[in-house]
Amino acid sequence: MHRNAVAPTAARPVAVVSHTFPGDLNGQAVMLDRLTGGRKASNFVLVGTDRKARPRPPGPAAPPFYPLATPFLFRKMFRVGKLHRQLFDLLVRQRARAIAAIVKRHRCQSILGCTGGDLVDLPAAVEAGRLTGVPAFLYYFDDYRIQWAIPGSRWQRRITATLRDLAEPTVLSRAAGVITPNETLADDVRARTSLPVTVIRNPVDTANYRRLREAFPRPPLRRSTPIRVVYTGSVYSAQADSLRRLCEALELLAVRGIRAELHVYGQQPSPEVRSTLPTTGIHFHPPTSTAKAAELQARADVLFLPLSFTCAYPDLIRTSAPGKFGEYLASGTPLLVHAPADSFPIRFVTQHRCGTACGTPTAGSLADSLAGLIDDPAGCLAMTRQAVSVAEDFNADINQQRLADFLAAPEAMSWDVPAVPELLPAA
Image 1 (cartoon, rainbow, N blue to C red):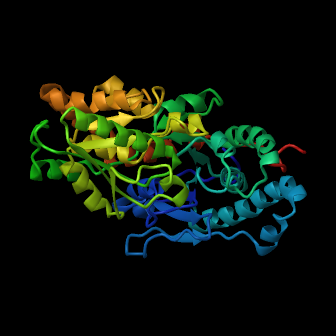
Image 2: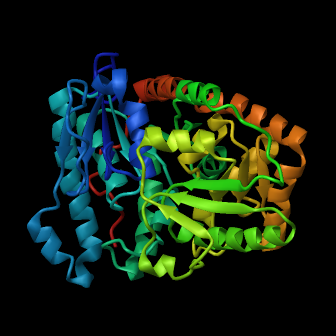
Image 3: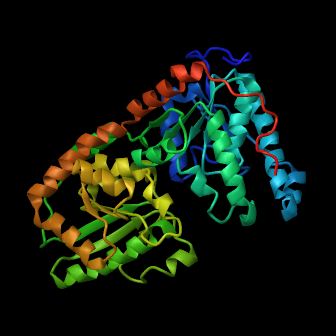
């Protein structure tokens, strides 16, 4: 064990380093809420790496929250592209020292660095672990390597490929373990590291969905009754082409005598994304609370889970685990997944026979898949029962315990890293 390390105990919290936290509407914030909220809240300290991150108003059980700001001088220096390589290392060190101070103040047992924010967040988390002697774990909500390729970060594109190839191996060599939300991403990460890698499902309050299933008994789908297809979530480029294709499929079904409507509950798409969608056929509704979304899912006739076939980052789609996936399974509502054939949701529903999978990007195939749900009531009932059964693997209490067990694993107790001054090799 590192000479500065202290053996973890149940009373010592975990420092969660993330750009978003409970109170935000995105999927990562919701998942962190379910993993760190309620009776487990005292086990965590929240470290925000985005100055806009503001967790929901503190309550008696809310974890401590510390926002980290990028120094003004650094923000000015980002305008000088030639300095980005040096700035990366400087910002990692600055942020690592800030995280380390928080870890020491609360005597944290470990650090949990989450993807999705600035590219320096994971290197800073493992460097803070080196400074404090506590194990640093990585939470890959999405693949960190893919994150480097997506436009919109502050780092110049001409150097991100070089930084990626330097940074991720260094980060993986110094971490104590990696968490992913699904097996597809876990397999990708295992191919790049010998670290312990575990799957922790995006957690769901399955008891609440059990109550909703009892409150809203489900009649079988019929051709004679209009079908209400529901999607609860924001619409980005990662969903747009599949939603557009569903609208085309609904038009084809109308010719066959099947009436169906698509209702979307979530943040309105950007003008750019909205311009790619039909002007008719989609009924947009404002975002709803988690409780209301659960009721909408339980009362829908069919739930639709779309992922893009045309996204510029296909590996991001392939390894994606939408937060709503476990909710859809637990609702007991027939599930239609329209996504690339190698994506995690398609593989999961096919393996477990808990939904209808359409991995072909044509409106005709999608129309046939939806019609199949309507015309095979016995098969549809069997799939929904199986979905409810496998949804228990997404149970919030179970996955909270999985997280606690992994962070306290024997590998973490003997965690150590070389005291190397440079985070990245010299340019």
